[in-house]
Image (cartoon, rainbow, N blue to C red; front, side, top):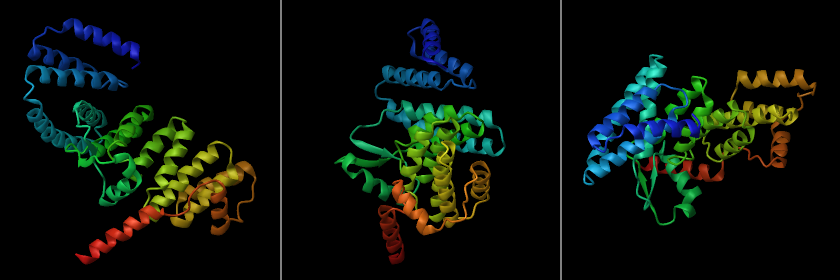
Length: 309
């Protein structure tokens, strides 16, 4: 849905508005239900969500916290139901619930005195503070009560699975506000960029993920993603080197198949790779090899804490 279409629909909605908060809320909800299942309707649903929230505030300024508490309880239940619907392969029904949750996340006004987060792990929390300490400053790190990163991640992955990667980018980028150091989240955002042909964004996302990975499986995934970008731009030898590097960390039929494809496509002899030569080439390309010192230090810290309990 482009801006022109959005404005036209909002004009129609505004013509129906009566000034009565209760009736206007019903009107907004009806329009939301009308477009809930339409591809690309996310901007409209977001605007409707904002208008609904504004109605609540105008009707009784003392109610928002109580209503938000109710939203949180309903959001948890709706998210659990959306996950069950996905397991049952009822994707459209699940998508409707997740789009509503995304609207609720956008609509709730968070205090600017805090950095609101939804870290996937304790390691993410530590890594985040190391990487963003200067940006955070004196602000408190507060956990968001709605678990937005999990909800937005599920929405993004579902849209990709449904063949709608362009729409998936918005919720996946939004979740970066709540946990920008979780490799699992970054991989999915990179996947959306890959599928929409935004190779530079996919490359940058993979490089950032490389600063956040914490195990061999994640390392292998990052190097496969980087190798894909290089292959798509015709840099076949470097691509093959990174596919080989991914195999150093974890076996993968996908990586082996890509190496075989590159060999057939380019005619380059690809049998001379070893870890040392690949590492040297990565240094030339400014691609780090292995887990970052920041992440490794925090892994060791957590292990030490767990060992004392």
